[in-house]
Image (cartoon, rainbow, N blue to C red; front, side, top):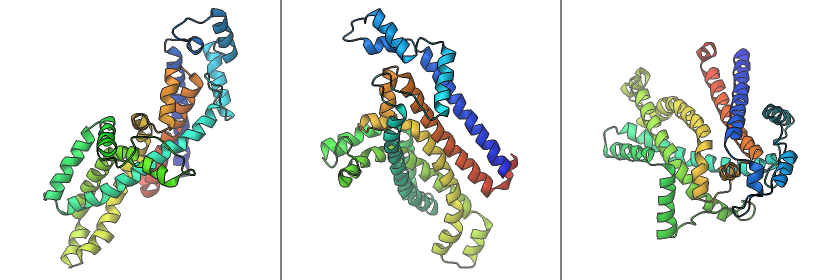
Length: 317
């Protein structure tokens, strides 16, 4: 297990380096000069001398490989650099915004599990029934509708038509807890729609597969109450693949919250990324992408280690 953990950890570190390097190259290959962009006002071309001075101050006049080495050297010392726009430390901005994005994803995961698990179990126990057919149809619909459409419809219905919620915004938890969770509800629910459909489908399939096993049939033949069979024999075995799928989807949700945060004006990491890309702010873009990559790789590493702990055959695969 120790060798497997070490091997997977080294692979994870390599992936983070690869992603960070690719993003660094792509960002620097995009046409446009950040110094010129920062000094441009109202479409008027800035003074070339001022542009050259700013490029020198920001280190943009250095060769690409020098900027690359300086960037990774800074990261190894915990320095993500400073914003080209306001010179604020990128690490501080990420530390401020990342918890908001993680809170959004965490709330969405809880919602998806709260709806998908019982509904998937009930549909599997009543296969072919009305509930099963209706839930299967709705889950298929939920998977086919883009998240920004779900968010826009939620605002139209619940905020503008019914007036049950605000169209968007953010209030800190310490400032007003009730208002904070009220504003969290719609964006988290929007993300939960797709994830809940996945949880429903995986739960249904997993429960059906466990129900067909010999030990469950033997318990039914012995006259064990249905509730006991479901609790002791079915759910315990069926939940493992469900939780694995949810863990893998949590990583992908990190990149999928961009539109949701934009639609609901949630000041998380995604909106910060959009602003940074528009301004060609290299340190900000690199820092944000790297932070998301580290989280994504870390989640996958945890899932792999859990698999290896549960099934020793995985360690030798």
